[in-house]
Image 1 (cartoon, rainbow, N blue to C red):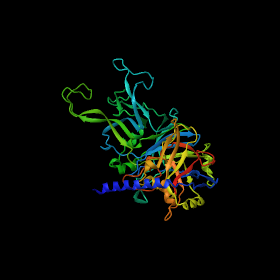
Image 2: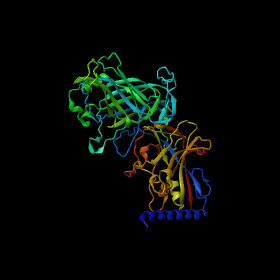
Image 3: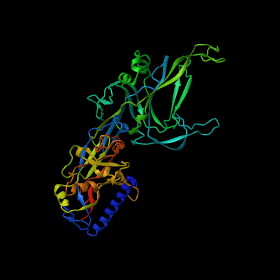
Image 4: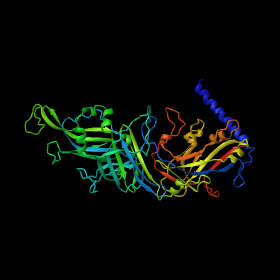
Amino acid sequence: MSSKRIAIFRNIGVGLIFLIGIVSCEKDLEDIAVDLTGQRPFDVGDSIFEVIAYHRNVDSSRVDNNDNDKAPTYLLGVNTNNNFGSLKSDFIGQLLLPQLGADFGDNAIIDRVVVDIPYFSTRDGDQKAVDPITGLPIFDEEGDTISTPNFNLDSIYGNEDLAYKISIFELGTFLNSLDPDDPTKAKSYYSDKEYVLNSELHVGDFMPNRNDTVLYVERRYLDGDPSTVDDIDTIKKETSAPSMKFDLDKQFFKERFIDHDNPADFQNNGNFTRYFRGLYIDAEGFDGSLINIRGFDATMTIYYTFDRTVTESAGSDLNGNGVTGEVDVIVKTKQQQVYSFTGVRTGKYERSYAGSQVEALLMNPDTENGESKVYVQGAAGSEVIIDLLDEETLDFIKQQNLLINEANLLFYIDGDQGVVPNRLYLYKSDYNSLISDFYDFRFGPDIFGGLLEYDDEGNPERYKFRITDYITSVIKGDEPVALSKLVLKNYVATDNLSENTFDTIVSNWNWIPKGVVLHGNRPENNDKRIKLEIFYSK
């Protein structure tokens, strides 16, 4: 029998022994736990222990893509919320050269320069095509309404129908992928970093648009006369998926890219990223929406026309002079160069808690008594500190010689709040480390929990974390683990265990601005207060 099969049967055997032990022990369950604050006896075999919960402000989150094992997402936009205040987020990206280089040929003239940033979106059937200007239906040659794919935009928070301003600047700060002080390590960028901004390349109002699926490029220089439109290119992705599109200053790129007289700056990406350091996309406004964007798929495309020397075939008149079959004819030719945001990407968050409900709780947390409400929000927002057991209670539990069958922390949502996080995350404050229940092979993330749970009517109700192994390790007799404060935060994908390396330190990326208000630990007569629930056998 292979060693793998032996391991499987061994685990099954251990599980059966554990279950038999629980069944036999539960015959002797006693009501040994006491609520030390109220001196109230509990039901046989389970106890509820009071905890203390208060707030911690997160000054900044990590926002770069310089760790190969992590794949962060980026946030762009503005939003104001009565509970959590206002958040503004900018996107910063380093562009890399096109695969075939940046040779513009002879007499290049720019038709259009466009930044294209895809939304996260989901296709949902088809819809009738309408003119983006008039709003009237578009018909085909036979008079039938044209159908186009219908998309729903994902990961947008706030008011999608409220416009705000987007400005795009040439970035003046060089973005390193390696730490200059220790080149063996990746450089970390945090959301409170300041950047130098140079030339403004775009400014205009913006609103999310699920129908922004097509780009039209007018070609005005094919006949040498810029006053006439000679052709219109229709640019559309194969998937027809929507993306946000921003026009950049053509004159800037003519001077800095086409007319530039030092070819070495475009020789390789190392030279290029020092010459042109990237783009800073700035969002401004009092309110609107925050959008998780696919920064890794973003591009800047230069659409241009250049002179190409060709030989006309018999009967062909490529330059339109009425003569066919000419040799070395100069033809105006359409072309494009695509610069990808595949260099260093990062972001900047600016928060203001002024006038929000969480402001006073963050500025002056009650670390002794806890709070009646607690606020959890991502993207350099607020986290909740949990003091589980005081020393007296912990000593009491240790003396009981308990077998912990299950231990849970429960967090109930405070009222109807609309959209709340789909998942929260719990970790140890000491060294920002993982709780053993999250990574132990006997339990794992699914049993550990944190997913949003719903009540019988389908309404968001609570988040539950199972921390049985951790509580057991704290109270066991021989070598108990030191009790740590726990931290509750918004969950992001980088909190998952890495497939390549096992790291017990919780990463500090966070790009999900969703927030939720939870019942705190007060008052004690509130059945939905935060509590530690322990099921045991003695």
